[in-house]
View 1 (cartoon, rainbow, N blue to C red):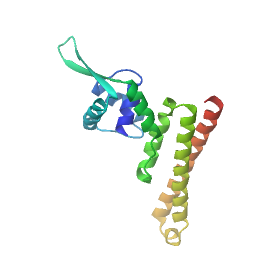
View 2 (view 1 turned 45 degrees about the horizontal axis):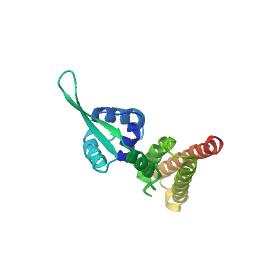
View 3 (view 1 turned 135 degrees about the vertical axis):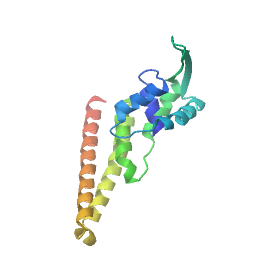
View 4 (view 1 turned 180 degrees about the vertical axis):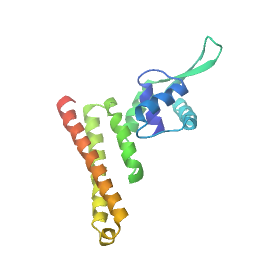
Length: 174
């Protein structure tokens, strides 16, 4: 997911590694907080794949800075990463789904429709699983699990409503 975040912020303009970190933090802090140390290997991987370029520049104070920018192949890779199916691990789903939805503006109408359908289908599946466990005989006796499962069901329901709103907007304005 860090590669998606890096490529997405680089669609706005070029940044240094510190600038990329701050931009990701500013835009996606609510969903994820990749460490500064995780950026360097991800940047190397993106450079070696031809998805970003690195330009070195000397500041007036004599400090060497490296500026990163997205390439045409990077734009294609970003779309590919946004469209890539998510893991069916519910622990990671909500944050990753929100990141992909936040970046959906980089897709065309049909690609957004496919993304929305995929995410909504997974959210419905997770919501149904939570509700099935919630209605289990053992869960009825476990106050803490019951509260947590009920909360999970509400979180998935809210995400489904958001996606349905995006679907309607995509149909109208695509």
